[in-house]
Length: 266
Length: 273
Image (cartoon, rainbow over all chains, first blue to last red; front, side, top):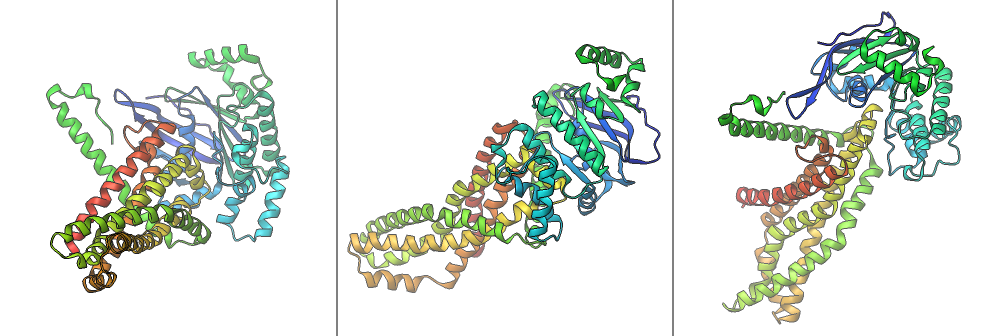
């Protein structure tokens, strides 16, 4: 069993309680999360970091109820995702906005139609109201003039911005980012982080960022969760990481220092 | 359900374990597909109804398949006319050609060939489209936006297929009979009046009803299997990953849908004839 630490926070919006998730492997099960417990506080930014295949994206899918854990409970605003019915789960998901790793834009729809989709399907807004709201968001995310383009005609950074615009449409309480800067050059990465910081400040949502863009992503974090071989370590701030005595975290800190020290871990 | 590693199973029991494992997989797959069918049908009645999407799918499945159906029907009808003429001529019964051509087309060839052609043309495209949407997380994105993927994506295809396939079958029957008329009457010289009167005398309401029931069932079968395989592309054992999984599953979907059409053709005929 892996040791798990739970952040003490009465205002938790997401709670993992003794969650185990495994997948079929060549020889038995490959355990990704081993009885892990942690909380994600409301209104703050939590970064979930770890190497490839350590269960970062799986964690997000578990929160959304897109996957079910082998055991344990996942509470979102006090509701146990693992025991909800389809309709209740659908209702719970209205609290979330998600920016997928590959943006997950609908490739047969234009930028405008992609961003307008949640409004068309989930609200009773008129076409004119939808047009106005989408225009405001596109302007915020510096996408005006690209409304009629299809996803295939956009750069990676623009796709992420369209994904973010779509995720923000229904004014979500919690925004989940799955590897928001993967495949982007440093300039585009900065661009996404800048837009994230701005929208986060303006809208005040709870943010959960899954990323391996270390140490840069720590600059955005209030809380850091490190995943390693089924084990979870929670740090109330990025600066706490360097005080850990665990060998893998020591190694990780040294690697981070060599890669480029940033103020986040100071 | 957890699978025990092969190495933990005694050597002699491994074939039994593999058989059991396969059996459980097939049962789970059937269960998944059964639930998918129910959700797909239920989604048709969910609000808001996606009228534009249904019209788009009618255009793709129905109008888009008309040329293929026309050429398949006219060639099948003409071959039936020629073959029928040579067979009936031996017994001096050329006058029965209209009856033979029309009954064969209305009860068997019309529904079956229409379903097979639509499966090959539209079913494969649907499976690939939904499979790509699944692997590129577009279906996950719909679920995360609390948009029911069945109502939004699957059910309009179900409805469009249930409308299109019977209409395409009717078109196949008419064009096929015209093909039989061209070959039998215009080329081989069978009497035009005898051709049509034998058709009128032998084709009953029951035969037409059989054709209609088949076309509805085949329409549902092809759209269910093709969209379902695409939807579950990541759960199909041995399909691989990424683009390769979509191509393999698309091939599998067309094969399963085609075989299912042929099996159900026999079953419906056996029950209704």
